[in-house]
Length: 334
Ligand code: AKB
Image (cartoon, rainbow, N blue to C red; front, top):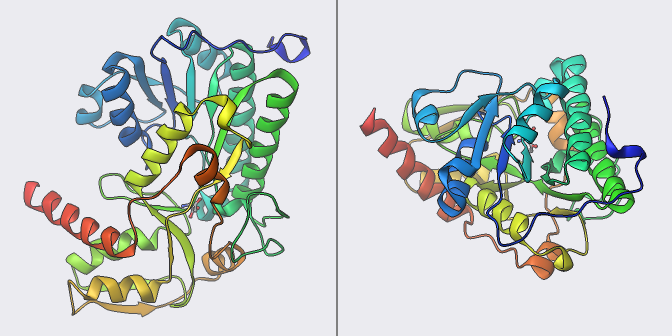
């Protein structure tokens, strides 16, 4: 495998007047399809390629280019980047916090080895590279209320360790070779059309479905567990705005982004304004509760607001009414 790591060259970006050609890895997870939809509207359907190792559902296949790509296969990734003249890479492929603890070896492979492949290829091909980080990149010794951009990061999950590694590697390659590395630390993301897979914040999606189906949600976290959360449309908008921000505006390469923080009890209370009969019982599971207790309860995102104008549109009230509306709509169409 030949990469540019030993070269003295630095990256030169593509001409700014051209539309980016985007490859999204892990595209069938919670975030890829929605991001592709937004980018295709702006840059053209054929300029955004979704990839994953799973077979896409028919609506994804018919909405734009989709290719098989395993992030562990360096040669295949390189071929895709070269043949499709990719200029932006959004690296969504990763195992989340809870599922990572259940399969540490696989998480290490995908989250660290897969990331190394992507970083090498990004340097080699002068890509603008977006890698998401997370509230999970902090740990029990980090300041938790709020967690600033720069502080102690000693996470206790393989997911968190791999994300801190990603932040540091990306920033190192930026300083050494000029890699246009961009990283946002996402809160728990709340969505309807695509489900999260194996995270600690997943209850905050499930509770809406349970509220509208059985009226009962059994929560695996304690009622007072406060975590930063965000509506998926804010998450997508932050990602697009950050990718489009001129390099000269970025005083950092890794930014916290925040929208709201709530506990299971608080989101249940807000849902009860629409569905008064919602019952929530609490049965904390030790793995996810321990993880949640080590994460920030609030994010300080003042640098993102100042540097590139980040501002969320959804608070808890707006999030709850929008989620219930979207799930109801989805159910009547099914
Ligand atoms: C998880 O819970 O693992 C993710 C995250 C906050 O990164 N949703």
